[in-house]
Length: 322
Ligand code: UT7
Image (cartoon, rainbow, N blue to C red; front, side):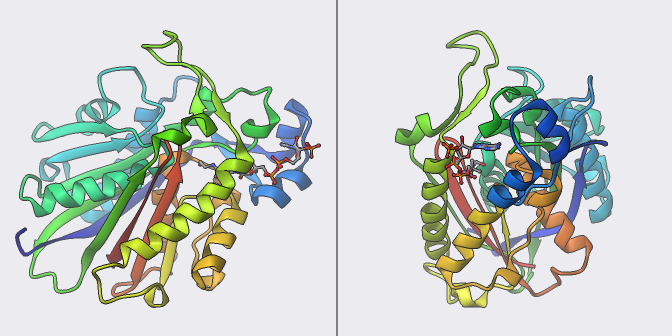
């Protein structure tokens, strides 16, 4: 491809106002703050208000990322929304977001890879930019998982929350070693039954509820994530020991710790925000990324690794020089 590199030039995040603590969850199902914190690291989650949709969360985060990049609607020529909880079966939530943000050129589409959606979108956007089709891509991970939870199932409802995170990706010539270095995506459809939603337009004509065999997902997550991190370095002159920051999908604190341990990476280099918003699926990587950029941990020149794994199974990783 061309000598264009894909630079992350703006970040943004949005969490709905309403916070639900573990103590409140214990009033709904047979659980406790102690169990949730010990098994997952989660202390609270944000829940979208009635009438507040995935597109609203996405627009709020997207607007902030555009402002951070110093761009307005006329600069963005592609909108990608990674979501498993779209406003409607169709059209794509991205198209609603495009209109809502006043973007009238280019194209917009959704990516459905559940918790890996943002990492999938990152790789797709990089290829669109380096291939010359897009110049400035607004990539958003946005979810209202509260709408697909079975609120009587304590094994799942305590884990998830709503939120959105966004980046603006820009194509740049002569960026030196800055930008996206490599990405790797994987999926394995034989693991469908371990994490899925038991409804959909074609099968049941309903939305369905999330179902998960948590223990099995946990085991696969640690192995798949450690493997994909090794793989994303293949063909580069870098190794996991060069990583300054890992920005992982925020599903469970124990998965983050176990993956870092397997890779021999210090837990101090892992950005952890799961305590504040639970598992927000496609929104979790950009929410954590925004936090670490905003508080000054991630700085120009740092080597940053994004990684995620989710339903499908899908999983992936991207390596970026900030
Ligand atoms: O984002 C997509 C990827 N998803 C994930 O990565 C999730 C991966 N899995 C996990 O994070 C963990 O497996 C869970 C947090 C879901 C569960 O933790 P665990 O240590 O694997 O617990 P477990 O499923 O083995 O359950 C242990 C016990 C069971 O009771 P018994 O059978 O030992 O009597 C559960 O019924 O804990 C019970 N339990 C609960 N107790 C209190 C399950 N959920 C709860 C709860 N509160 N909310």
